[in-house]
Image 1 (cartoon, rainbow, N blue to C red):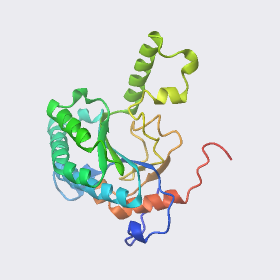
Image 2 (image 1 turned 180 degrees about the vertical axis):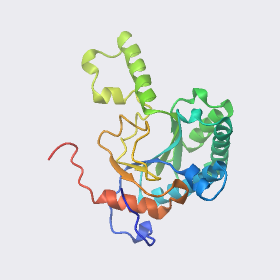
Image 3 (image 1 turned 90 degrees about the vertical axis):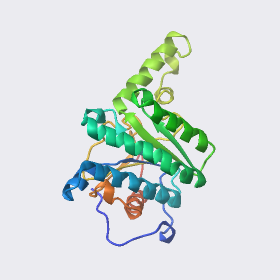
Image 4 (image 1 turned 90 degrees about the horizontal axis):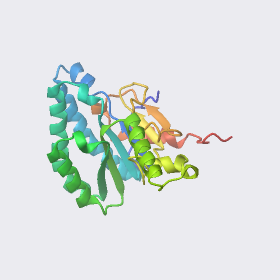
Length: 248
């Protein structure tokens, strides 16, 4: 597990880093953060939503091109009705509150996952945000909503089978690159670095196909306590790794 060092660093004060093009984050620990402070779980989720802004700013400073955040998994529907409602309310608030600043800072915002179960007004907010920011090039911010890695692969296989039956794809066409084109992340590079907060060490059904050669950083910090310095530390650690992709 990557241990965060004491002291603060800014992106501008760091030596030249090998910055990952694509960072994905499993934002874990909101409930535990609230419980430690004897607060309702909603307080942890609200604080976690606020942290996203700092994370986006730090990504821009570092020169990260793609930032993918695991915002709501397909398994999160199993939580209480009240908690799910709170999470969806925060999503609405974020999409309304942050879109103008994201646009001004050159951030394109989009989502991956199955939108069919999301409320119509949330889908409309997503569509509006995508349209407003579609020409921005500095950073692509992707929210994984109603997302599950296994479901994504099943969805891709079904589409591939349909195209094969229609004669659009032959057996000889099917390889890793072909399958990747049917994933939600088509057009995005695979994540170079996946960060998980809260000390847990598992993917929790996140980007299973895309993580084949991803580097991992498991941080012993709850998401509401995640800071710009946390991201910088993880990227600094990544920069020192030797990625061989199975070669020597």
